Each structure stands twice: as structure tokens, then as C-alpha cells.
Image (cartoon, rainbow over all chains, first blue to last red; front, side):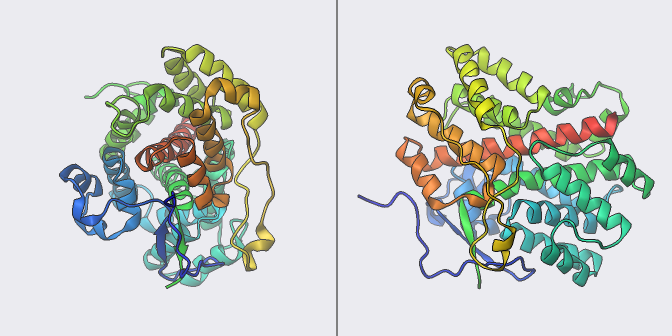
Length: 199
Length: 196
């Protein structure tokens, strides 16, 4: 009988949160690069993603992959007004820390460090978890993100009030809600369809 | 100007309101959240996952989140499917047994093990499993894992799905439904809080 899932016996799984670049191995067969259909390539959005086993696995259902990716890019990269990129990445890292997605946390903590130039504070989120005390704004962003990550969702008027008091307008708060909610989507795919690998 | 979309309905956003204007500040996000919904729940099936299965899983995700507007939306659609009313009743009873709080779960053994949080692993009861069938029972068990304790997920959980009749493409669709609902429920919840 053929195995129904993929093993990666030579891979070393990370056991701590890190800002280092990690690999990721799929537990189900990705679509082989050489047989990707035009529609699956459209689903990848950037053809460079054909190198990624994660995106080629998701390419088995190309349309939802495409809309997922287009939403992802706009939620994080469209910084016309609203929440600065650094705080969007911080929200993604905080949700990933809360759910325990070591891979997603590595990518988005790295982006948060790049855009904030506060690598050490970002590392403290990874080391200490979502209860970390950094500064009023980052604490409020992390707290709101963790409340959005909870099931049932624990986000409420107290989080909105705190963010407004710290000077965020409603577009910025809506950006935070979308960034944190999007990572509740991404974490579940990354955590359940494969696992990270140390380089 | 495009009409109210699904996330507007789940968030109680009326056309012309402040929140409507806010969502239209990000038209690409708005359009693709809706396109994702339509791809999962309205388009023709191409991965061997029926509309009834899709709506059963979505309604179960909403039930596990105790999210009123989501439950109402997806249960109503499910109940419009052949056999949907019975399925809706079955998953409502299962959700009562399955309700808990997340995220919990274990990390790979190492320094993070001190943060491991124990919690229930959901199994559909035998009597309900006989009514739901092996395929949907496995889907609901996997859904509970992804909703409440995704960091516990292992290759063996996907093997269990495949053993219950899910293809690789079907397992990807199932995972996307649970993950998309996890996004949609939070976005709607957050927007409701922002508009309150």
C-alpha cells in the first residue's frame, strides 16, 4: 500500500520561535511544478511561488488560492493611509505566536523587524509570548491581535477603545482586524498541511 | 457601486454607513474576501466536495465559534440543501459536545513544551457518525482540530481524512473552508465591534 501522507525523516523541526528563515515541508503531494495548469498558475499569482511546496499544494484548489493571495497582498501591502506596515506585520506575528505557528511567526516577525527597525522588541514577542510588555501601542496591537485569534473570538469594545485612545483611526483599526483575521486563516493552513524545517 | 456583500451582511454593515465607506477604502481586500466566499460556496465543485459538505463544515465552524450571525447564515444555506435540515440538527448537537476554548495544543518537544496546553480531542459519537457517514464525521473531527488546536495537527490527521475518502484536492478544499471561515468570522466580529 502506498503511503497516503509524505514523510520528511531527514528534516529537523524547529522547537523555538525564531526570526530566521525556515523551510516548510508538505504532508500531502503538491502539484508537481511541470504539470501546473494555466488556472493553477493563475492561482499562484506570482509564478515564483511555483517553487514553494506550500503554494503548489494549495494549487489543488486554485481559485480560493488566488483570492486568498490577492486579499493577503492588499491587507499587508496596501499602506495608503491606515495602519503602518510594521504594525500590520506585528499583528500577524502576534496571532501566529498565539496559535503556535512557528513558520508564520518567523516570516512576519522578520517583516515586523524590517519595517519597524525594532528587532529586539519583536524578538521579545517571540520569546515571551503575547503577554509581553513593550510599549503602549505595541502592547495594544498585540493584545487586540491575541483577542482576535481566540476561539470564541474575544475582541471587543475595550480593544477598540484602547486603540482609539492611542491615536489609531478607524481605518487603521480595520486594517489591524483584517491583518489579525487573515493570519487566523494562514496559520491553520500552514500548521495542518505540513511542518517547518530548520535550514 | 456594488451591493452589500457577504461580509457586510455578517457584520451588519448597511450601504452608505461609515463602516461601508471604510471597507470601500480597501476595494481589493473587499472584492477578494467576497470572491473567496463565492469560490468556496457558490462555484461549481471541482475537488469532489459537495455543496452540502461545504455548508455543513462552514456551519460547524460558526457553531464552534459561537458566532451568531455566522451560524444563522451558514445553517440557513445548509437547511436549504436536500437533507440539510437533518444535517443542521446533527451538527448543532455535535457542537454542544465539542464546544471549548482555543487556541490550545502541544509544541514540538523542546523549550516551548512548557507552554503546552492540554485540551479535548473531538470524536463524533458513534450514533451520530452512523448518520453523518464516515466522510463527514472525519471532516468534523478535522474541523475541530483546526478551529481549536491547530498546532496539534500531524500528518496522521490528514491520513485519517484520506482513509475516510478525502482526496488530496478535497482535503485542501476542506482546510481552506475551515481556514477561510476562521478569517471571515473574525473580520465580521471585529467590524461589528468597531461599529458598535
